[in-house]
Length: 417
Image 1: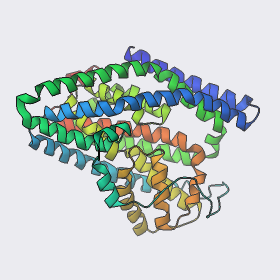
Image 2: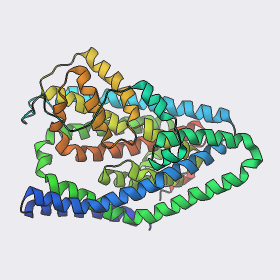
Image 3: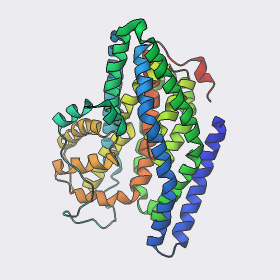
Image 4: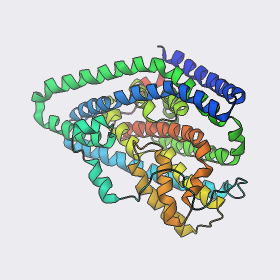
């Protein structure tokens, strides 16, 4: 399917989903019936997301191993890893800090006007305290087969780095295996093309399902909170564009964002960053970013560079504190930033990961976890924005690393797909 045609169909699916969801919510005999209809609609989205998850593990494995093996030396791998990690840490600090600043400036939780749940109420989100020892040990896979079966991206990345460096050391003897992995990569990209035919239907179903249950009225009820958060996301976009543009050029950043419009729209509609991974990798290739760099940076980005999600964690935590009238000192807010800086790195692949991180953070500052009940009703609409921001953040990060590695997008970027 032509890229522009797919974009148009996704947008049409989004608009039709809004209209259909509103109609279901308005015409259903009861909220239970609307929820039942939404459940049937969500089957399409669930199937689409499962198809995407079917692709991700073999795609990350093959692209990353081939990419590392073509880097020429272990020194190149180490240098790129250091640069990538440095950018991710900087972006994380900016995201979290901006979230804290904006919620303090806008005060969306002050006088929220909603009935506060009791401090002893349960939000129904399973959490446990962050355990650094467990997190570090979990990064290393016990079995690559198990890691692929459960889509543990970080574990697949660790194995792929070892495998790629091993192939580097094998020299010409690695040729047959590299050709096989390269063929696997192209096969998975071909399957991605087939799966994307379903994307407009999945977008329609995802939006219709969300609106059918909650209705458009919920957006007005939480207008201050949602509006404040999206304003903060817009400022984060501006900072990312300025930071990226200062390195690769503002014209290139503009064309890059246009070039990744399809994975952006898919992520926004389905509220899933994973849904965009295969298409984002393909889009970056069309933008002239070498596959060896994109296949190295993106998997790491999906684990360590979730800019929108990190901003949400800081924003939502302080929103709940404001709703309960809890005043946190500057020192406590800085401590929250540092805590989120660490805990947010372990959320890749966790369902509703941002909510889990927020729920685990609140007790450290004596904020009732029940405050999450305030935002659960609109979390899907917030997730759409934060997930789409993750895609933009990782696209810009990949282009920046490519520039630093002397492989900046040039002519190819000038002709977006």
